Amino acid sequence: MKIKIIKTTYEKVASLKKPTRKKPKKPSFFFRSLIRILSAPTLWSTRFTCEKINMEKAGDEPCLILMNHCSFTDMKIAYGIFYPKPFGIVVTTDALIGKKWLMEQIGCIPTQKFVTDAALVKDMIRAVKKKKMSVLMYPEAGYSFDGRATVMPDTLGKLCKMMAVPVVTVITDGAFLRDPLYNNLQIRKTKVSATVKCILSSDEVEEKSADEINRLIFDEFSFDNFAEQVKRGTEITEPFRADCLHRILYKCPFCKAEGEMVGEGTHITCKKCGKTYFMNTLGRMNCENGETQFSHIPDWYDWQRQCVREEIEKGEYSLDVPVDIYLIRTSKALYSVGAGRLIHTADGFTLKGDDGAINYFQPSKSLYTLNADFNWYEIGDVIGIGDKDMLYYCFPKGNIPVAKTRLATEEIYKNL
Image 1 (cartoon, rainbow, N blue to C red):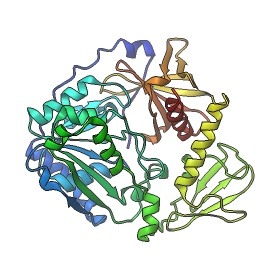
Image 2 (image 1 turned 45 degrees about the horizontal axis):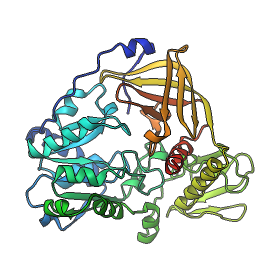
Image 3 (image 1 turned 90 degrees about the horizontal axis):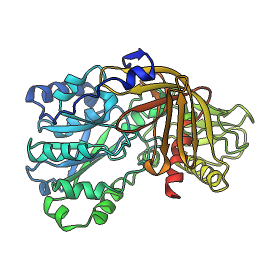
């Protein structure tokens, strides 16, 4: 997937008038049907099925739909479940670039990822109350890296209380295995299903506290795709299943080197010490020339998180790297403004570039997690920061694991 890019300067981008926010539009039956038809080949090839639980509690009311975010298959799954009922989807502003009109017609409600957006809440309430359509959002916001739920904001319960509609969760099984983010958009053949559950009626939303609602939501999002793969015996036989696995498993458990891992084919190898892991068809890891320290990928990922936490506690963590800088201010294009430098410490992120025109600081207290992505729009691995006025997409030069930066951001926030 490509995106329109314009090379320019920061000053020219900053001078652009920000687009006026439009009220959410209820998608017509035509556009709902069009998306459903376009989704059909994927749903058919994955033999998609869904189990619905307690949906009678929702009745015919518009709902707040909370769906886990595993892959680019997610939106097609949503249409496989809820069509022909109308619903809007909360999307990030980059999804509108070059196709704003179309995205508005299908009911997309734009927001800036991990940026406080009071207008978004108003748009969501308007959609369910005025437009009488459900709203689907991905509360994790970022894609899952290791097949488990990513960090979610503790404001979800308050959002549910404000919307005062039934809350429905959608948890997929197989979508992550089909198209994990690290694997460079290479599609694997596997069955996909989903569990659709109304966890709260509108009356229960009113009765329960925000904290109680949070606990219910977080419980539903306690999944582990790699563990389920083993449990169900789901085999991924593609010979590229470990391609780019180093994006999430960036640190060697043996020599502790970072940025030296290389995932290729069915193996991941440390270039520094030579230790090689084989990824079997059930997603389990086995070291071929030493002791297997982590056979379960999420355990390896958790160990990396622990290592980052220890660096932070000792005052040893920092990131200071050259980056290519791209900006989002309008829906017309992604603006390339040249090279710069991104610094991350316990205090927050500092970005400098475009011969001093860019000098942006984002404090750690504003980020409970980080907008980090792999092969973003086929440009490269990215770290995204910004505010309501400008979004900065930073592409580190060299072999810099953006997964570590996301882990560090989350661990720093916990200690504030």
